Amino acid sequence: MTTDPLLYLITPPKIDDLLGFAEALGAVMGETAGTTAGIACLQLRLKEVSDDEILRAAEAVAPLCEQFGAGFLINDRADLAKKAGADGVHIGQSDGTLAEARSILGAGKDIGVTCHDSIHLAMEAGEAGADYVAFGAFYPSSTKEGAFRPEPEILTRWTEMATVPCVAIGGITAETARPLAEAGADYLAVSGAIWAHAEGPIEGAKAFKKALAAQ
Ligand SMILES: Cc1ncc(COP(=O)(O)OP(=O)(O)O)c(N)n1
Ligand SMILES: Cc1ncsc1CCOP(=O)(O)O
Ligand SMILES: [Mg+2]
Image (cartoon, rainbow, N blue to C red; front, side, top):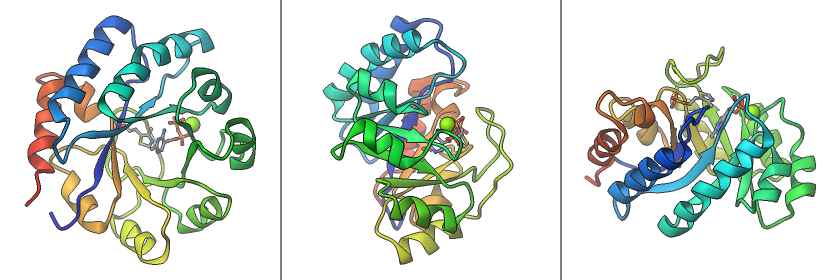
């Protein structure tokens, strides 16, 4: 690979067995630690669950992020990110404004913004102070349906015109990662390719280790 994106892991949208999940997460983080597929960031992305459930999950995963040196972000909710003492929040185009999230979290925290397939949205996010912009879904995703399907080239355009880091997301697997890395993604955001890997999350992590190995 010509570039070396970092891995940005996203949790499954529902976690039934929190202890079991934390164990699997620790194993994935341990498996990739110190390699080019080391987890740089974890996003807790639980959907249709109570605030308490999100905060309980945050309590379970935050120490692992600390242990393995990964940033810890919460999806959608700056207020819960603040309560959980997370490193930041990821917001979509319908999750409130960046200014609102910033006023809740303060200057030192990270705020990432979904920009779909739009350089225009990314410029707006960058101007509003986003710490990263996210483009996708690059490939069909079993985790989230979506109408937006950018070409990897958007990552190249962005990196040539802006300094704000870019995240690629959507259906990324060890097999589909390469064009996104070569196009200039700073981070590859991945969920299903780890958590729904046919042979389990550790094998999923090993596949990324192999795919992202320095060449
Ligand atoms: C890194 C990253 N990129 C995009 C998204 C999608 O956010 P959003 O559009 O708000 O959709 P939901 O994830 O909330 O369903 C993301 N979560 N993370
Ligand atoms: C949250 C999100 N936003 C666009 S695609 C996606 C899902 C990412 O999960 P997967 O890696 O399983 O496609
Ligand atoms: Mg959202």
